[in-house]
Image 1: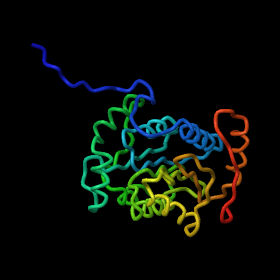
Image 2 (image 1 turned 135 degrees about the vertical axis):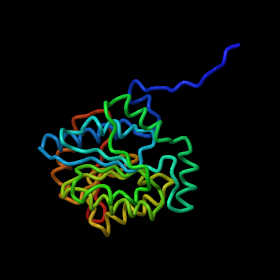
Image 3 (image 1 turned 120 degrees about the vertical axis):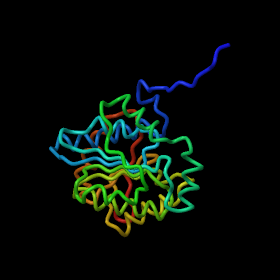
Amino acid sequence: MTNAQATETYPGELADVPGWFPPLDQMLFTWFLERQQKQGMRGDLLELGVYMGKSAILLGHHLQDGEKFTVCDLFEGDAPDGANQAEATKSYASLTQQAFERNYLSFHDTLPTVIAAPSSVVTEKVAPGTCRFVHVDASHLYEHVHADIGAAHDILMPEGIVVLDDFRSEHTPGVSVAAWEAVLNRGLRPVCLSTQKLYGTWGDPEPLQEELLDMLRQRTDCGLSVQEAAGH
């Protein structure tokens, strides 16, 4: 009689890692991060909400010498309130810190700094004004996203980039409200929008937009439109 044993699967390429990270956003992440490097910009990287590590793996490829990459997720921990706990149980029941670390180490020699806690603690762990790129993909509840955007503002360098995930998905109205509130009332300047993500800065978006438009107009694999709304 043969006993079947569960085996861990190690991803061989990014497409093997579970998660929602479309090719367009992979391209945009890469473009923003490489532009920062070409500009000589140095600063740390931060991701709030990692799921199985798909976007974190890409971010890790752009870490420069002397920089620090920090990720923050509840993993199997307790959420700070009942609504957040229900959200985590419904959408992320399969997420474990071990699974994230296994996937990440399939592509990198060392782990980022891992904070296994609610995203509300990140300002205690990451110093103000130290990050050049922050990806916000944690809770979809308005109160938490509002706080995460505030944390990103404090942690980012003046010309840093923040990326807000799920800003217009039908099941995440809390993210939509918090994202556009940040644009209208909290000084966030949109640079571009993808199907899932809003890319913004509290710095000057125009040089970024001009260079990004030049790059996108040379591509044939993605649609492009330029629009203005409420002065943005």
